Image (cartoon, rainbow, N blue to C red; front, side, top):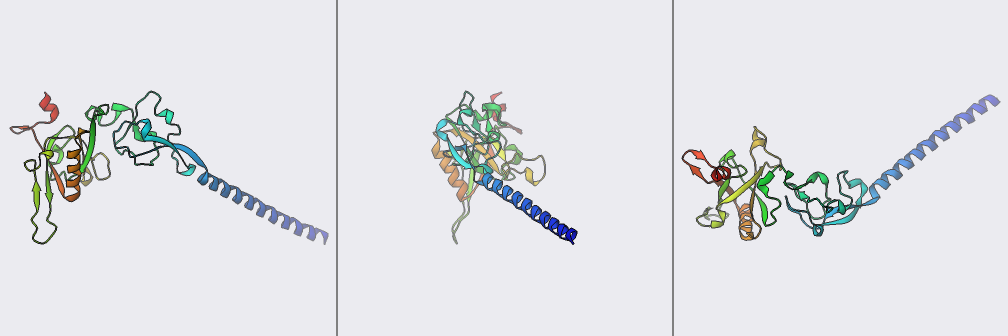
Length: 246
């Protein structure tokens, strides 16, 4: 009889012990999970919008506390890392206001994929991207280094309203634009073949004081379709800016 009672208490004790272990493990894991998601860490963030291929300066970056769970391993935890002698530039995606500054989205000057064409160290330059259909815009002839004229098509919105076509003849701001990059709709370099090889975004470079042209391109891009026509031909031979310089 005593043996049966002893076995019964032993089993009960084991059940209680297992329950306590499960409870302790669950409690510890939950506590660690909550701590991970609520623990705050200081990281470098963009204090305002940083366009693509822009030089990072101290007035554009600040420290802000974020939950550790959302801080990527590439995050910059100390702003002195960015301003200790080296010059860092944003890559092709740039940063929005409040975005965490990540080392994998930074470049040291001309080491970017766009190379010397971007002239990143020339602070008087700016970049602007426009959407276009490259199949209708001379396809692969629109490449980095190409000088293009833009023609805008704006479809009539109301019954009886005529479509509008605007060329450099009507708006001189649409002439002699320099292409420095092109990407597909996913902001990735175009593939060699297939529909994904059709770029949808073309980046142009111009003087940073040329705000009027930039505003015009944005307005045309929002209201209609922008087509890019390469300029600079000699007979049947296409001339890029590099060829013209030679």
